[in-house]
Image (cartoon, rainbow, N blue to C red; front, top):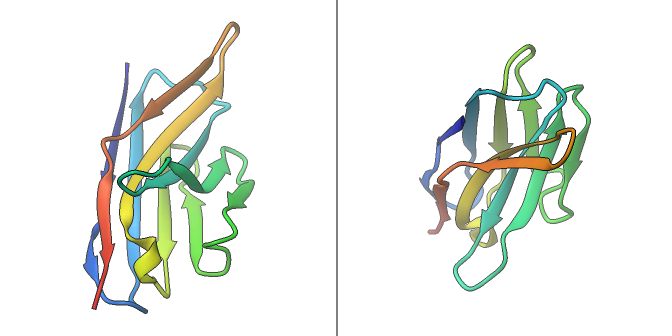
Length: 119
């Protein structure tokens, strides 16, 4: 079983910063990737940023240059530093972890943390 905990959401004003944290624990393959996704009611969940165990990163075009994903060495904890936040960044942010097993892809999700950007 895998347990994922996200923290750091909140209400901020446009231009402010927030830092989200995510920790995954349990039976987890070493060769995994973790990421942040976000979802607005009525819309599909979208990838915000992802990072592999080796540190390779990927960002959506809408957050490039404003958000930075990072990962602690040796464990399954990631962070999302969000700068110059915009009202369009308002969403529930979900953390996930994924890896390829011998017979299937394993994906686990956290419960999400709300980020609201409003003046």
